Length: 78
Length: 250
Image (cartoon, chains in turn orange, purple):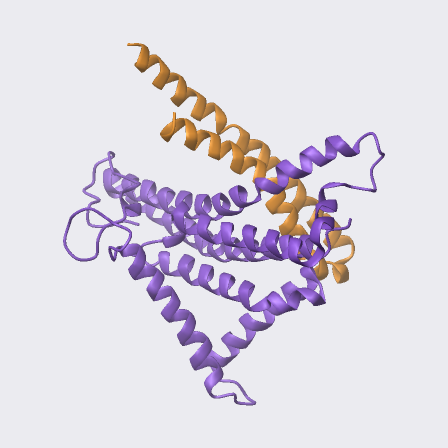
């Protein structure tokens, strides 16, 4: 019985951990949105900054990946 | 992927496509067993060799189609390494080019219906990410000795903040291989699982199946984009880590 409650807690925790991905999506939207608004103001400078945008996306996404990792650990390792 | 085991039920197994199976017969998988992962990684390597060897064989002034693709890929990665890592990073261009082309082919081959996506396995991506992490760390210490540790000591910050920042920098340095590998694996696995879920919807809806089928088409197009972007992100992050190793002083 006790084991069942632990498993239930792990599953609920895994679901809750996935809310962290929402934060990553907000962050990525912010990065890309600002890139687009900057690119429309100065299109000639846009091409040189795409790499920077992707690095920014990757760093914003990393925190979402950690929440995914926590969910995976709760599902399969706990 | 909608495969032969999609029998029309909602209890369709989305993770079945990621099973590692021996190529010949049944039984346990040992480290030396040829599996479907081996097969599809091999196909990715063969495709890479075909593109780059066949592409550069003619060396025509007016390039053929395959030569243009090979030149385009070479120029794209070369410019990325030069822009992000700087000119002294170009010495390590072959490694980044190999990583990029291999991941591109592994991702794209995984999109063929019925194929196996090797990059959806953490074992594959973690090996590549750890190779990058260990290589970059060793390179930093070989190039700069102990002064490589100044990467963690940010002199631009006020002195009181520096120890706290150093702790944060060390943590963020050591989670690099984690995020580097799980980003690629998660994107590949999630995208393919979503397609399988929509294939399950198509099985139960009858005439209404046209909607999930159209949705699968749209998701497939998105996955095509994601397959390229994730390879690009993997390569560009390798360039960023390389830049940190070559120029650790902020």
